[in-house]
Length: 501
Image (cartoon, rainbow, N blue to C red; front, side, top):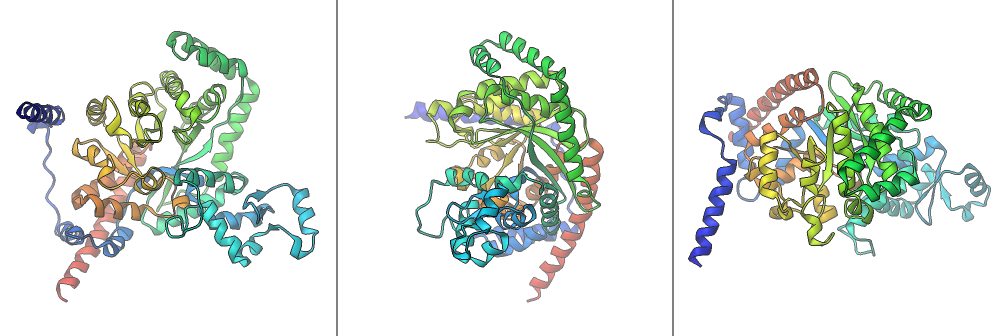
C-alpha cells in the first residue's frame, strides 16, 4: 500500500511539474480598479455556499461575454422561428409526422380538401392548433424533454433528429432572416461576436475515389498521392469552381448588413462526417479554398454525430484529409469537433484517440467539446501540448449534459482548468437545447465557482481565440474594455445599493 501511495505521489508530482509555469514567466495581474474589485466581491457572494442562480442569471445577462465560438447556425435558430419561416416559403407541416412538406403539388392538393380532412398546416394553423404546436416543439427541439412522461427517444437521438425536421426551412431561402434574429438576440444578451458554423461546403461524389480511399487509409504515401490527384482534378473542374464561387457569393449576400458597431459575425464552412470519402474530401477542398480567399469565411469544421458508424470507421481517414489540406493551405484555421463521446457510446478503445488525432494529425487550431479527454491514452501529453501551443477547447455545458450525460465533476472542464489548458464557453445549438450563452456562464459559475478574474478572462479569450484577423480582434477587445468598464460601474453601484439595505 505504501509503495502504491508513493507511486501515486510521484506521478502526481511529475504531472504537476510538467505543467508548472516558471516563476520568471509569470506576469503579475494588474491591480483591479475599485469598480472591478466591487464587482468581484459581488460575484463572490453569489457563488459562495449554495450558488444564488437567479442573481447569477441577472449578473451574467448583463455581463459582456465577448463571443460565442462554437455555434451552429441551424441549431441556434429556435423552432418557433422555423414555424414562422413556413409561411415565407409557402410550405406546410404534416400534423401526423411533424415533417415539412415542400412539394407544391402536394400542398395544393391538401388545401383543396375540406378543412376537417386537411393534414398539412400553415404557420397560422400550427399556432392555432395547440396540440400540434406543442408536439412540434417537442420534436423540433428539446422542449419539455425532462419534464413530461411521454415515450421519447434517447436524448442523443432526440437532439440529432431535430435537424431532419426543420432542415427544409433552415436551408431554403431564410438564411439572412435567421442571421438577423441571431444578431438581435446576441446584442440583447451582450454578446459582441459569433463565429457560426454556417453551411455545408459543396461536394461531389466519386465511387472510385471512395474505394481507393478506404484501400489507402493505412498507407499515408498512397493516400496523399490520391488526394493530390483528385484535388488537382477539382481545381481544373470548371463546374466545381463555378459552384464554389456562387456558394461564396451567396454567403456574402446573406451576411450583408449583419455587422455593425455593436456586433460582428464570421462564418465557418463545415464538412459532414457522415458522408462517403469523396464527398467529405471534395467538401473539405471547397471549404479550404473558400476560407483561403479571406473575407467573412474564417475557418473550416467537421460536424455530425461522432459516435455513428461512418464517422467512427473513417475518423482517422478524415484527420489525414485535414492534414493534407492544412499543408496546402497553412493559413486556413480549423476548429474540430473531436472527442464528443462518453463512456458507453462506443467501445472503450474508441474513446482513446479522437482528440489526439485531431491535434496531432489534423492540426486543429481549436477543439470542440473534447469530453472524452479522461479516456484518451495520451491525455496528460495532450493537455500539456494544448497549453504550450495555446490551443483552446470549446466548452458546451448544456449540450454535453443533454446529449451525452456529461456534467458536474464528470465534465473534463475540471481537467482542462486544473492543467492550464485554455478554454472558451460556448453554446453549440442553443435553439435546439433552448438556452443562451448567459445561461452557459451561469452553469459554469454555479458548478465550478471560478473567480471573477477567471470569468472575465474567459470573456476576453473568446475574442483572443476567434479566427478573426489581428485588427478585428483588437477592435473587439477595445469594445470589450469599454463594455466591462460600464458593467463594473453598474455592479459597483448595485453592491453599494445592496449594502445599504
